[in-house]
Length: 100
Image 1: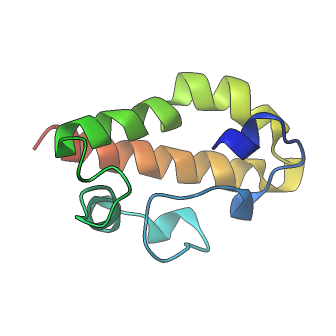
Image 2: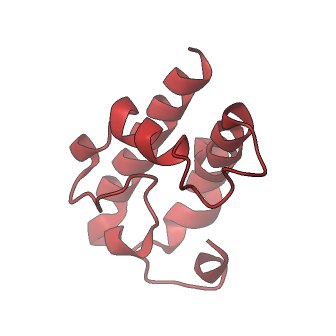
């Protein structure tokens, strides 16, 4: 994510989608695949943060208000809708996990 801050011409493959297998489209990301990644005991912060805190951290990163104003404008036009849909799928999955 730090590398994205100064980058332009971003595309679908520029993002570290929160799933184990890189998705090729938004429909491949669902609550189950996001949960497997975010709540994995192998996640980078698994030993230092609670599952709820990990979900909240991902939500901050992908939140539409932040994502659509700071990141999405730097995505190339032909990839923008797909990236926006992917970010939306991530947020829906994370919100579902948080509300369990």
